[in-house]
Length: 76
Image 1 (cartoon, rainbow, N blue to C red):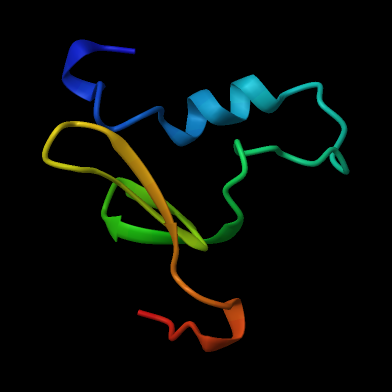
Image 2 (tube, helix red, strand yellow; image 1 turned 30 degrees about the vertical axis):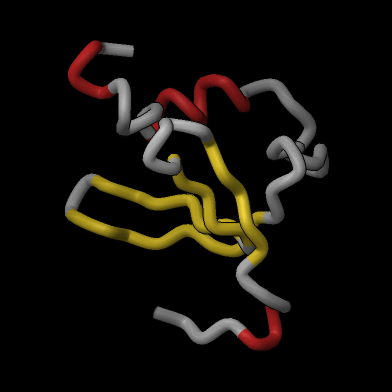
């Protein structure tokens, strides 16, 4: 990953390369986060959304909080 993309994660192509050869019915484990959806945030930016809000506090500590039941979420 290039230094300019440290905060961006990986590209869709890189993710596809990592997943090649894995069974299509294999479950992806995301460290306890529950997948919600994928959302386009720009021409070349896809955001993975979860049922938890993940952020860093002022001290830099990573925080994950539930945002409520899935059936109460409103599509943004």
